[in-house]
Image (cartoon, rainbow, N blue to C red):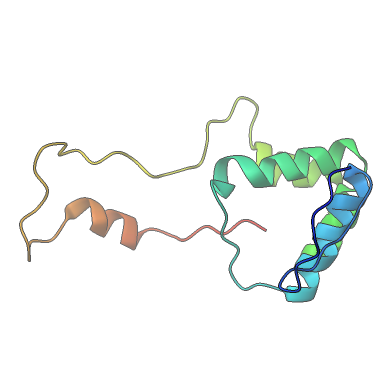
Length: 125
């Protein structure tokens, strides 16, 4: 195991295995109870990976109940919240701009920005 000097600005939690790591993550998440969760590429990778690992370690229902306050079966969580329909494509709605050369002039309304701002905000927990 690689060890570093303790840093008083950080809390270190030694978990020992993946199951304990996911449980510690869940309990920390619950303790801080964020209104908004933001992470690097969390809509297409991180949460799906976390949910899949929890599913395979048989702790997904435990995690879900503590993070949401409601009970669902593992199959419901995975099917409806992360996998969607069989062979479903990503729900990520962000697209490349249609005008690769020239952006709108200063003061002009960006029609694509309006499209993004008018749509629903999806937050996954």
